Image (cartoon, rainbow, N blue to C red; front, side, top):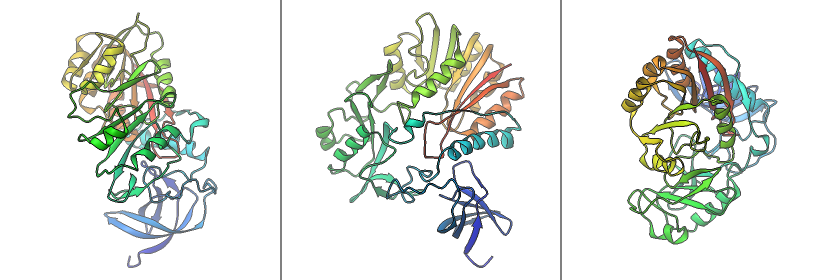
Amino acid sequence: MESTQFTIEISSLAHGGHGVGRIDGQVCFVPYALPGDTARIHITRRAKGVLGAAIDEIVSPAPARAVEQRCAKFGVCGACTWLHFAYPAQAEWKQRIVRDSLNRLAQLDCDVHWVENSELRLGYRTRAEFHASKTSRGFYALGTHDVVDIESCPLCHDHLNSALEKLRALPLDESVEIVVNPEGPEVLVWSRVPNAALRAMFPTAQSPKDRASRAGFLFDGALVVNGGFSQSSLLLNRLLVAEVRAAVADASRILDLYCGSGNFTATLPESTTVFGLDHNRSAIAAAYAIRPGQYRSGDESMFIETLRAEPWDVVILDPPRAGALSIVPALAESKTGRIVYVSCDPATLARDLKKLAAHSWRIAKLTAVDMFPNTAHVETVCVLVR
């Protein structure tokens, strides 16, 4: 294969969102390509049996390719890769990616339900990490650490874009995470090291070296704290919480693993017994502030010990992208009637579900929640019963 330029038909989408086609029998992944596109491309990467490519020209656009250009930096900035992908096709492909991952990696076949808020496909982000170089403030270019200068992002809430505008005026050479309250004035700012200019602009600016209590604000009854994890959208998080709460139903004893600041359980009725565990001490402190006595910091060894110690009506787990492989054996053997597994990665979810299925657990309901519209990311809530 001497040439590096080809015309390719895109037939599907890969986990991760790249378009997929074939060249001389080899799979070719093409960022920003959509199913139904015919594109002229050039090869950027070669590996055994797999090619990577970039688009030179769209010869024939997919029916779902949006005509309207909603951001001048789209196609360079890596913050979103599906801004050109129209709904409902985008939603259908997210469901398909989840379903195909489970079928291919775990040999599990099930329907994938869909939950979204169609009014929040833009302007939904309330948390973002902005990067800085000598001349730019914004997001990284796709697949690099090159900073793309962003004045305003269509996915960001107005409050977050306002904070970015202030950030752009400061002398910075580091990344800064900003979380805003979409229904209030609060702005949380977190940087790796203390920065006097940042603190002068944003009074809540903090870093790991600060000894003062973490700044925070209440949202939907839960505490959002500086430097702690929160979903990219506090508004769309309501969809996720509602789906998990529906799966928990009227359970009276709940074990909440990788609980963070108690996103799913801190505001449950006081009559419910909750025990939450997480690595992050500041997140546990935030959960504890809302629901004292029912959260504790610990690692996977403590998770396993707790799973084996006593029965629970429901076990909730929301692990990081790497999944929960180390605790799956204890989870499979635990004395619980229901598992609610929340995942941001269909591939690691499929890997873990395959092991749970081998121990007589079955999927009662699988739901894709559109927490990241106009990107290839999707959150999944899987309810398992014996």
